[in-house]
Structures are given as structure tokens and as C-alpha cells.
Image (tube, rainbow, N blue to C red; front, side):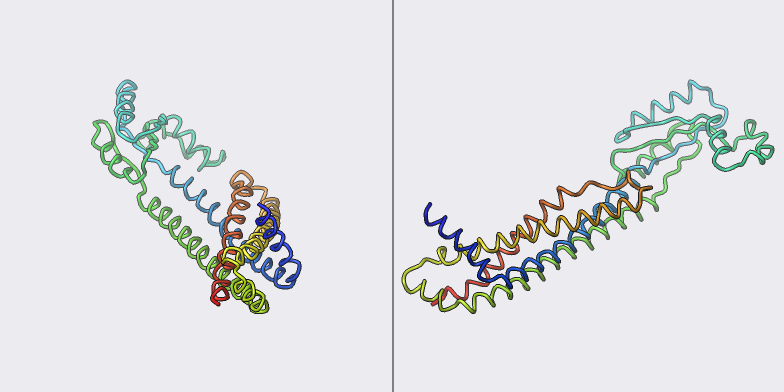
Length: 290
């Protein structure tokens, strides 16, 4: 236990003795984590929006004109019994006409809508939401076979485009994530090597008098942990403040923003500490060979 306390103390002393390199390493971690945080925020929010769009894609089934209410209800029951159908909502002909007038026609043009009630332009319809959108086309085909269904509408192209866009964004975020980690690891390793080079004689003496590799490495790993934690915390504060400022500027979309503060903090700590420790271990390996 005394040895561990001594090694931890040495790690903090290393930070104090190498203040310039410590600050440089923290800045590198901060820059990388801020960039990664920004890409994470963009990626996660766009992913949430696209997932919402995909989820809200529904099948609309229009029934034949003139069907009795009991027949329409029976059709709705058959649709609801189909596999993967999670919700079904009926819109009557009168509701469809009312909605069309409200959305498409101003009050001054209501005269042009006379006769809609007696035409077959509008009919009762069902809006169907499914569990697995990959099966939506198959379900739409099954609905179309039901007696009394006039037409089924499902825009497969919109779903495909939304899904493709979501996959592309996730790929870009993942590639950026990997590149940032690789660059950070390389730069921090080189920074640490400069410190180790200046202390190579001290390390060699410790090895000659019998110090184990773990004994020599531990203070540098402790230093790496300190660098990672401080860099992660600073970058988290900056990133979340930037995120909050953006949210405040776009109040119209407040309900759409995800709360990513805790996730960014945990990610920053894991990656920041991980990169710093790995960089320390990689850099010191060369100087342990005496």
C-alpha cells in the first residue's frame, strides 16, 4: 500500500515537474474531445430525428366508397390482426374532407369544395403503424388483398432515403471518432516521448538498481490519468456550454434536442483517460529496455 501511495505521489510530482508538457497534453485531449463531442451531438440528434421520421412512416389504406360502417369496422379488425401492426387509426370520409378544407383551402374558397361529400374523391381510410418498417411493404401488400380495400399508400422511397441518410451519418461519425482517437494517440505519444527522453538516464538508473517495469511505468500512467481526467472535464464543460448556447438560439426546436450532457461526460472520461494511459504505456516501452 505504501508503494502505491509513493507511486501516485510520483505521478503528481511528474505533472508539476513537466508543467509545459502537461498543459500541451491536456490541450490536445481537450481539442480532440471537443471535436468528438460536437460530432457526437450532431450525429445523435440527426439520428434521433431520422429515427422519428422512420417511425412515423405509416401505411394508409383507403376503403371502397359506399361501404357500410360495420363492413369498414370489420376491415379495420382484419388489418389489426396482421403481424407487426402495432397501431391503427381510422379517418372517416367526413373527417378527411374537413381536414382537407382546413389544410388546403382558405375560407374564401370554400365554395369550390361544394359537392365533395357526394363524390368518391374522399373515402374512409386507415392509418397503420408497424413494428418493423423493413416488413412494411409486405404488410401493405397483405392489406391490399383485403376485400373492400380500394388503395394502399406506402412510400417505400421515402423510407429508403431516410434510412440511407441515417446510415451515412452514423458512418461519418464513426470514421471521425476513429480518426480523432488515432490522431490524439499519436500526438500525445510523441509529446510524452519528449518528456521521457529528457528522463531516460533516470529511468535507466532505476532499472539497473532493480526497479520493475511496473514500478517505473506506474507514475507515468498516473500522470496520464490526471491528463485524461482534466482534459475530459474541461472539454465536457466547453462542449456542453456550446450545446446549451445552440439550444438557446433555436428555441423553436427545443423539444427535439437530446440531453447528451451525461453521455458526453462519460465518453470523454473513458476516451480521454484511455488515450492518455495507452500513449504513456506505448511511449515508455522503449526506455524500459536497458
